[in-house]
Length: 187
Figure 1: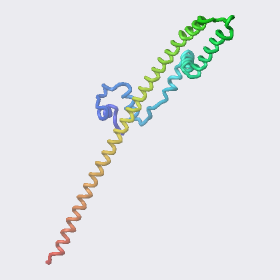
Figure 2: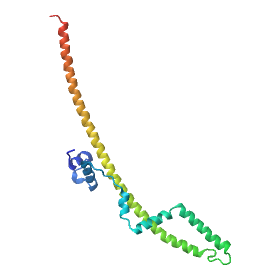
Figure 3: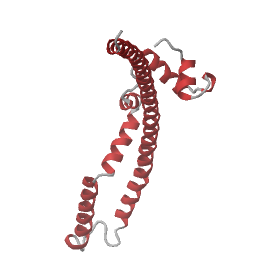
C-alpha cells in the first residue's frame, strides 16, 4: 500500500489532512504501517496511580460491598443490643446512642469524599477507555473500507478478464459458425 495519510484521509474519512485530529492521524499512520493500535488501558492507568489513589479505590470497593454492609449491620445490632439489653444499667452509650451517631457521622464524613475520589478516577478511566475504543473502531472501519476496495478491484479485474474471454469465445464461435456454414453450402 504505497499511499500517504493525505490520500487515506481524503478517500476514507472524506476530510482534508489539515482537518484531522491527532487520533485520526495516528490511526491512519498505523493503517499505513500495518501496526496494531489496541492497548491495555488498565496498565497505563494503574502505572500512574498513587498510594492514595489505590487506598481510595480499595476503601470504595470495600465500602460498596455486601460484606461491608452485612458486617456493619451486625456491628449496629451488637452495639444497640449490648447497650440496651446486656448493659442496661451500666451502658456506655445509652439510648438514643449519641456516641454511635458520632461514630456513624465520622465514618460517613470520611467515606463519602473517598468514594467520590474513586468515582472521579473511574470516570477518567471510562473516558480513556472510550477514547481508545474510538481509535480501535476507527481503525477497524478503515481496514474494512480497504478490504472492500480491494474486493471491488478484484471483482472489477475479474469482470474485465471475463469480458475478454467472452469476446474470444464469441470470436471462436463466429469462426466455427463460418466454417460450418461453408461446409453446409455445396461449392
